[in-house]
Image (cartoon, rainbow, N blue to C red; front, side, top):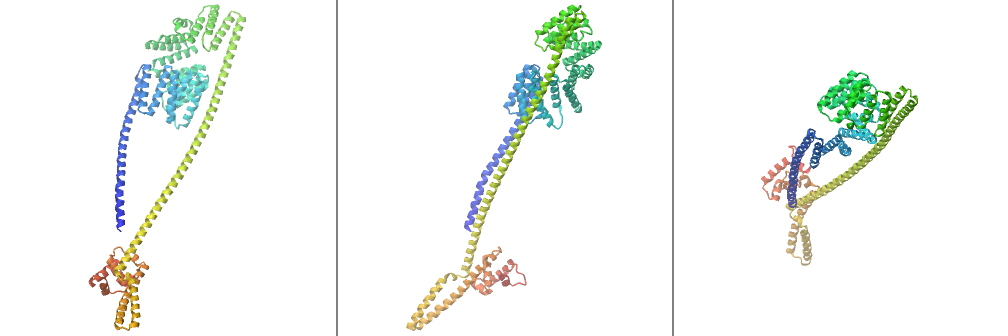
Length: 618
């Protein structure tokens, strides 16, 4: 019992010792939690500061200063680990470089932002970055790069549940690319779809750009009536952007000129001219604008066309407008021969330009064919007509080849893209299979560890239980031995009784020889003592019988019983009366009666039952 108490005390001490590390860990966790909270608040402040810096870039007027400031914002976000803002910073710098015309820098920053957006699964931002890249590659005439971006962007849109503003911006860039490669029908279809999308979303952000694209396509296809309708619907939306409004007004003037409506044409040309004069644009733009008017009015009002053409500074014109200058100058010549000479001069000038000049050459040859026909010079007229016809056929053939090459390129890129997509799907499936196998492996390991831990705990509990049972058995044995010893003190001296019998035998042997009466009396005394000892031995057997019947274990089922009460119960079971119990246990009879009364209550003896019956029935 003392050993068990000591073990419990040691266990309590162990618990006290293990509590201290747990408390230390809890305090450490609390400190870490507080630190993380402070760090989180600091991150929010830094992120907000990064957003404010990004938004402030648009207020910087000078483009070079804006690019420099954008680089500083990028460095700030990189130093503070604002991942999403780093992507936005790369995107902003890429857009600014595209506005400045730095194609290589623009592509680098936009590709980096697109990769980061894709990695973060920001699909709409990835789409916008792709759209701006399409515009950059479009001006570089890198059709393959544009088509790859279009395919990846179409997949993003297909995965989206609802359309948004970013989709419209992408469709505008896609339409611009199709216009560049001569697919006017596709350009118009995309522009119409973007227009419907904007109307369904009540979005007016890109409305003017959509209508402008549609107007340009209609004009290219020769449908100036629809072009005028598109331009007119948006001309007032460009009010804050005067130069863009002037371009739309110029397009309106050109469209009316092609329709032969000189009054309307001059009305819109004058509106555009007033804007240019008010905004004080550079001379290059003014010269281009005057040349556009001169070319458009060359047939409607040659005199007015000449006035505009004479006001142009030839040195400030780009190569294309220089051609227009020479071409219009030829139309102003008073005689046919002078027109022929001026047109030949225009052809010679075309050979010095780095332009796709076949269309311009064809126009000149057609005019020369017309001029020579008027002079009845049919030989030269036929030569120029054949040149015109040859050039026209070459242009059509080249357009057909170009469209076929574009379609082949689209098919090849789609095929490559599909193969890459299929490979990606295979990789995803393999990754999923590997993850599944990992999961199963971890599940098996976890299950094995759980079984091992459970088995270990079971074995430990079993051993502990076995030890506890052994201790209980040992305790019962000790209690039984203690009871037997208290109840039958002579039962442990049976060896002495046997020794007494041996002495009696020896005495009897001497008696037969000496025939001494005193010896006989001694033998009687010894035998009487032995008989008394025999009765004690008999009591010991009764005690042993109690042990064999597990009677003491039955008494232990009543934890309220004291040891003295158990001793009284055992004697009652052996048939002892109250007086005998009193003598045997050296107690007063009244004390024994009190014990009997307590025992009845603790054993829950009914009134019909006697105490001896209750004890015997246990």
